[in-house]
Image (tube, rainbow, N blue to C red; front, side, top):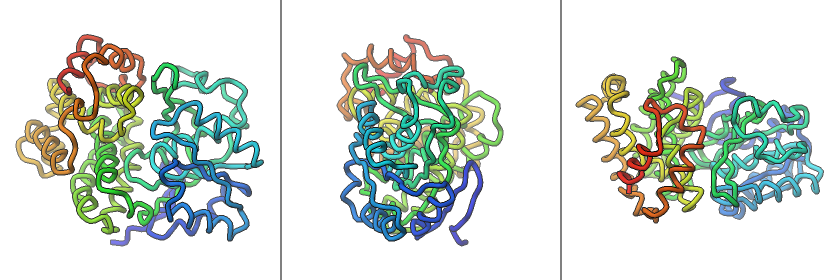
Length: 381
């Protein structure tokens, strides 16, 4: 089977090895003549970034680059990015990298033409309508990891550096105009990033599948996304040059982010404040939280995961699936506890507060309260 495709759902996606060469055509399709490539500090000096800038320069599109992006990007990174965007007289953004580069790149394009502070556009009610939609610059997304799926998302997660709270900023026009998914760009990922980002995609699928909201399309996508991660993440982890495994994981990442339109839950409600306070890797944190959350949600999700386990080839129904998750984490070198990530018990009240106000709570099949979140954080420690 050829793992190459041109897709139009949920946006225009150019999928396949070597397709980064089509970046100039993607810019033309989006109406971008002076792009600013936004990525994180770790990627800025790597060969894949230099090669991408070479492609842009050869096409007469310049070498605009902004890389002052933290692992958990914040409003200070965003302000600096907007300054760079305006100073360079850019007319669009190429969001390049993992979740941090993708999220911040999308927000630079979003905020460059706005007059209100970014927090005014948090994903609460219809706050997105406050934005000047015509002032949002076009966005091209190029993922270099297979995890967050931010390349097909209509929102970004930005950390408030003063309150240490992660905020979801949403607008329909933040969905990139064109996405280039080239699995060759993920070949150089180290094992721990391959594992953490892959399990982020898995968590997205698990939580979407667990959500009680009605969205059968997302339900089906989440189920198949879990299968792809189960089958191909071990291969990508064992051999980073396995292009088929890398491609299937890149598909699973996009699927997870598409599926979680149905809702996320306690895994993300926990991992967002942990990441904001302790600066942990998001996908790895999700993976550590997942066993405790599955146990907590068992009364509401056991039946549906009995069916999922059968589809995934896991014996024992929900109990078998829950055991598989811990074994899967162990096989990929994931720490067993939040304590192993540096999380401390005295921070639990602050973490609970962050989880309660996180919009991600809305998709959990059991209502999250301060008491049961406190128990969840303790169980995961």
